[in-house]
Length: 395
Image (cartoon, rainbow, N blue to C red; front, side):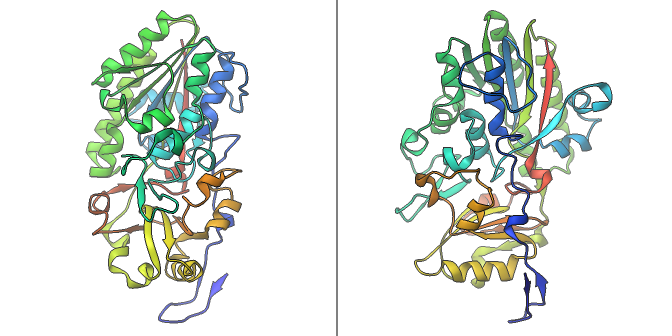
């Protein structure tokens, strides 16, 4: 669709939401990983849709913010992980798609439940609570909402544990009882350890001590470095090197009949100040909007009653050549949230959903002061944000 010049805008081509590269739910996404691993463990009821070989003991190591493309750009800082990604050495490393939006709360729920966002319901960084008139931050779980009402499906960990596989999560003690852990990662035993080295050693020990085992472990510091300093910074590259050493440490301790999978929840892109559009200072984008959810690269826009069509038109006019701007129905039909969206999830999705294609972000300097100052951002469906590694090491 070409928009004719009007109100000061030049003619430009509006991006078609149906052309956005929707995540590969069911064949190559994060939500397919644990069900495939469970099938490899021989747990009834699970089917593998990924090239995951059978094993008696499996460990999933998730590195927050480790995008596939970012890894490929920095082999000198991540020699071990890069070697696993290199097909020239006969390795089977490949990218998965994170899911939409490519953000931590959504991705961790997809990993833990084995379901796409349209089913588990954590459909954004912040989303509207239907009928309540306010947003819920699904990473911080604020304001409080009953976790198992918000996300009622069992996790893969719970199902694997019930099948007799020794299951644990090895992560920061800070996450032991959070609502996000309850809805996304619960099942088996939570083992809190402060340092990455402690987590790697404990994960390897758990595998060795059990005949059939599933272990999940996690580090968040790479994501924090990207947000604060950007992925084109020495701080980020040094943290990548630390992550690489942690992965090697775990891999070198794998017991027999075990497999390690290294993955991530999203990639990241640096957005320059001049490429940030401030919703709080833009009267056109804010007109008719009751709530602005999501994050800079993946926005849920909730309109005041009766204004949804006008909001969609304006957002398309202002941003439609740089972002895929869809109505709720268009985003669902295009498969952004998966092949199915539960009724309870439908109104959590914005009346308008805007996903960045280009190097642009819609920030909110007054209502989201912390997020607005971050250098590295993520959330959309571009390869650098969507593609995350699936790297394999066998004990």
